Image 1 (spheres, one colour):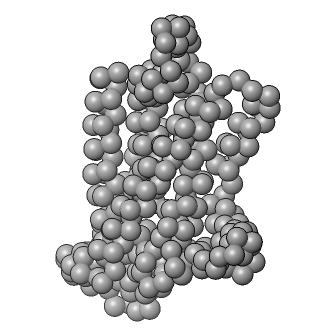
Image 2: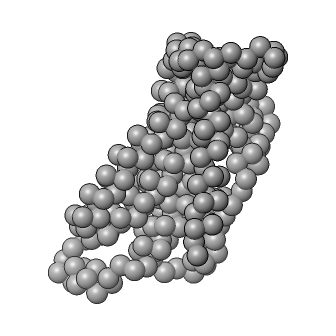
Length: 279
């Protein structure tokens, strides 16, 4: 019964991958579509020696690592704060989660034009009000700007997962610890954090898969610049394919990105498996 669905899924996955492998071994430039030839591994050599390749890999890893750190740390803290009952709790939770449903392009435009604009943005107004010089975020701190935008988009996802996990926490155990004299910090360290071990592992795995493919925020705000300061692997592949029209090199870059994603996924799966075993 499931064979047609499995076959369709297999074809849907294998056909694009096979075409990418094929074009990665070809010289295929959109400007000269009739001059196609087999070049073997030359596209990979060209991509690996491209001036922005190492920078794009470093930027990709910095972006993924920084956003994960921000979303996990602040996600845990925020979820613990809003887990305690208070007036308007439902509204606050809804507002915390709502940024996750905003399209990446829209959120990037909001941050670029309404918040980080060095002339009319909110941060510029705040700096002037405090007697400080406004910061030109996308020129002075380009990668940090992208990290803040992406972290703002993914923080609600982490908060949602952690709040859901905290609702299943054994409250009797928590109350018993408090009756025995445990303060809030001790309860957080010895009860809350161990309880959130599995959700944290899930958040890290899911976010890493998507963060390796960040593109819209970079394209909308910095276009990979200044220079290649915010160029990650997806944006470098985009420049090869649609700006330099080199489909062969872009296909080779796509396979490199696939390998990198699988390496990251392998270590994350091991991390999650270890976390689940110890929990």
